[in-house]
Length: 429
Image (tube, rainbow, N blue to C red):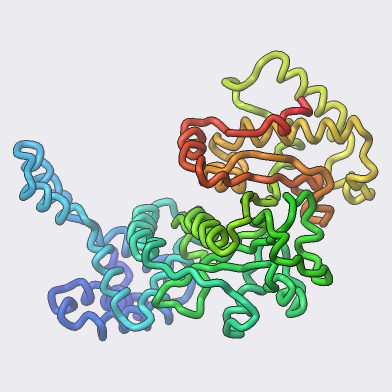
């Protein structure tokens, strides 16, 4: 008995699964638009528990036929040529992919695919058996949202209100405090760029905010001060990427940010030839959590001297007696820290970014920029005294430097496990 037959008691689920099967039938190929719309409508009607069963049906009933795959693989192994390779590729592809392609062709199909994946991603932790279904979504979305197909637009005060509202709503790093704050972030010395998909012209997929400055920033406050005075364009020497936000959860693990930053840098360089430096001012989420858990590092990077320095710093912070959250609740601020405490936190932060970033579970922001070919450039004490900044990193922030002539080399070194960093980062240890 098939999965579908076991669940015929649920009429709505049955309708949804039946609609999906019809869509990938021969009849569905010639009537794909109307049938795709039917799948989309039936999916929208499913309750949460029924959606779990719908994805389960996709996982069990929309797979390649093992016998056909085996025969095609054996044929290719015995005679590897174009014909046998094409035959193998054809039978190995899951019917799910064709289902998603046909849905995508319908009006609003792209939006429906993203909605379906958003739902699916919420279920993966409890349902790892859906991993192959998610892989099919991701495989197709990587192609459909290839940066070569996307449009990069500058978002300014004259952009449609719907887009401006999305920017306020989706800002994930430094909250935008209403329209006055947004207006300041869109003035001539502040820029916002976003990627858009042709099928979703009013939906920014990811956006980056840039400050055009005369020097490398060491604090976030002036960058997001809505009452600050705009800088004259002839003084622009530095472009600082201070916030990047993903707006579409359905595109998780579809790489867009690295392409956006590089494209923005190229456009700004063309517009302002005097710009010589491209940096970020980035948060360090997870740093104090790592410190509080004992600042452990892999044995392969440890030395007796380094381990002694780490233990000395951890001991000085004395987080066993008072946890980090307790110290913050009692009013700890960077300005109140002793010189030794500041040195200890700065040293640990340097070690964390240099040695943990390339490893599994390393800092996600560091992985993003270092993986894009940036250089770990400077640490800044008391750069972000917000509640979130203190909780995550004791207020420390970091510059990642994008040397446009060396990003490829730096990327290759990071892939091999090496972080490229400036000497100033390691002064504290």
